[in-house]
Length: 433
Image 1 (cartoon, rainbow, N blue to C red):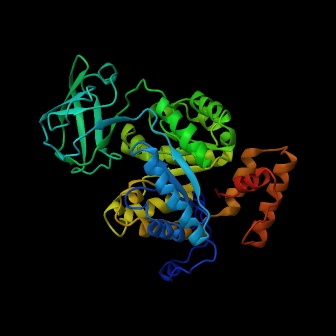
Image 2 (image 1 turned 120 degrees about the vertical axis):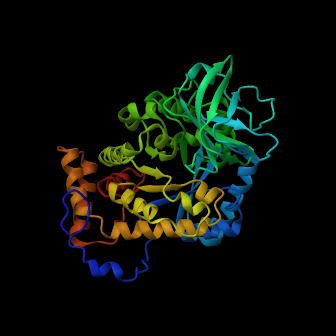
């Protein structure tokens, strides 16, 4: 089994695959971001998540209020003290996200081939015939034949919990759609995503700014996940806003690429952002299925060569309701690591999933196995060739340290640093986050 196109250690003995996985003193180098929510906000469950390998806790402000998230964060702090496991805090903005508002929280059944109207009148009650949305410009953004997806939290692709709509006509501010599949929507809030439709909403909304300047400042967040990043200017504006908030000037901004517009401006976004989140849920709707893998591989390569951490989402959707991932999902996690992903972000799997701890543990084990066969030497040579010479003094020192570590098969690199820059340079020459 000789491979020149995959970053795999050679040779791999087929018999070794049957050997039991050995526990390691060190956790997987690929980080796991867990979204905390209804099924994962108690001290007991969060402690389990930390022990299983979660190193970043994500707080998604597209649902619930700051008080709810603050209570969850206090539980996280208690769990950190209890387990003695460090965990960073990521605030995920709402951004240019369209939502269906279901104030009654009654389940809504939608039948294939029936008609449903999307209206900006949020005072209306959601029903099988009428769905109120939080955006009054949809009628100006769509045309007949456009595709719209609606689902709880994120579109899952499930034919029973997410619905695919096709625009049939526009009547004033309302959008009339044909339902393409039968589904039942349950909950108070559903994400609405228009495939390849440009939405005139700001990337950093007034609501986002309020949450960041209050909850974010109070809790000194480590990362800001900038949802629906479409241009480099979005990152610059967010950074300028953070710079005025005292301690948050050091908060790292991860640009979330979720639509075609963000994909088209990927290179300039990468230059401005501290890291990239590949939101495969929404982007997977905008892109043809056969193109999703190509975007992932190209984007991860660009992030790796730029020395910017890359995070992949939507890997084990089925574990929201099941104890084991599908074979395709398990392979997907491993391939994300081999492609160069630095972290895996779990959304619905931990937020409302039935097995948050088991999901984190399973993903961590898959990442660890993929890392065992990852060819660090080949990756290092590719990175050095891409960076070229002359290097800066600091980067040269970091590069030499990594080269020596690879040759002697060192377990760790201990780096003394005051700003963190030397450590980040070393990390950039390895495929680590």
